[in-house]
Image (cartoon, rainbow over all chains, first blue to last red):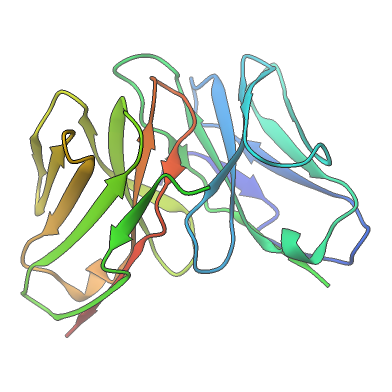
Length: 114
Length: 111
């Protein structure tokens, strides 16, 4: 167990809807990164939050947005859902300190868009 | 886009055999990490190797890194049925930065 939790575990939405996914980071970690993993592929970086500020973004449209809270937990919001948004969404927490580079992943939220 | 490629894409071996998988990447890195994923669940961190290291061991795992060839290998010795999973390499360019993953190697260990 990594101490990183995500909710919900599964979610079904329809095209055009909005979704919010949640992540609680490991105790003491100040950085949360979000990844999207399509079936049969490796995870793709969406964005990272460090001390409540966005700190890097991958090649995802603005309808993917996020938040990090003072307790370092985080949310991923996706607006105007598309069928291709169906994927496993993973969050990872870390310290962002040289020598402590390991990112610890949660179990993921599986999103199905119909 | 994926940083690198894993090779092979799939591997089937008998329990007790060794499993070797390779990872190539495209740009300079700070660290390379290997993760395991069981049945589409969360990623479990296995081992991290820094760009100035050439080989690292952890239990039954052995990782090598060749920065001149931009490649790494993961060896699992004396495999067990419980090693059945997908294995991913991931690189970062600086401490704590985003991880860029390869496409993974799916390993099946038959009892």
